[in-house]
Amino acid sequence: MAFNVFLSHCHADVGWVDYIIKEIEYDGFGVYRYDRDPQAGALVADKITRAIDAADVVVVFLTESSARSTYVQQEIGYSRARKKRVIPLTDRNGLDAGLAMLDGTEYVPFDYENPENALDTLIANLRSLQIGARNKFWLGLGIAAGVLLLSSANGQDEAEL
Image 1 (tube, rainbow, N blue to C red):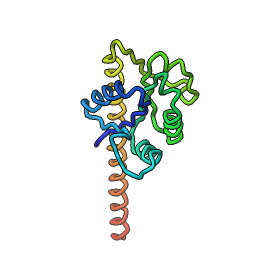
Image 2 (cartoon, helix red, strand yellow; image 1 turned 30 degrees about the horizontal axis):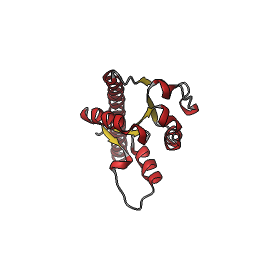
Image 3 (cartoon, helix red, strand yellow; image 1 turned 90 degrees about the horizontal axis):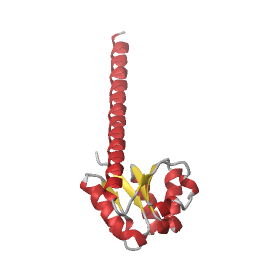
Image 4 (spheres, rainbow, N blue to C red; image 1 turned 180 degrees about the horizontal axis):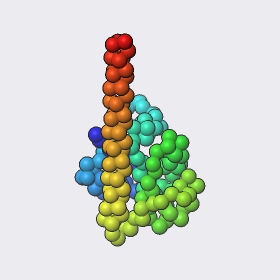
């Protein structure tokens, strides 16, 4: 069962974004980035909304540049509206941007001098969410199997009467 991450970012941060994606993918998570999904003639906004809908979690690389990006702001708003977990991975400048949609949201601090600490924390959070999603899946499957068994047993009981 794959666990998919949508990484919201600004193109100005692409060097760091490439590094972040490499680290997340190394740990076995799928990461969507629209520019790695060419679809000639497709609307970028449609690709992004489909990818957010398919994602298990949204990570926002929040920097001064991305905080000013209307795409990043819309991706955060759309993710919130779809009840997606949004994890800000943020440097000090991104944190100071004051995006209302992220008020009160716990974040992972990103230090350019020592990015490994932030990525270790982010990946630990992703693993925890993945385990929770997997447990929820198996619980749901078990409940469905139990309901089927009960309804099958009820049908047998009624047939015996």
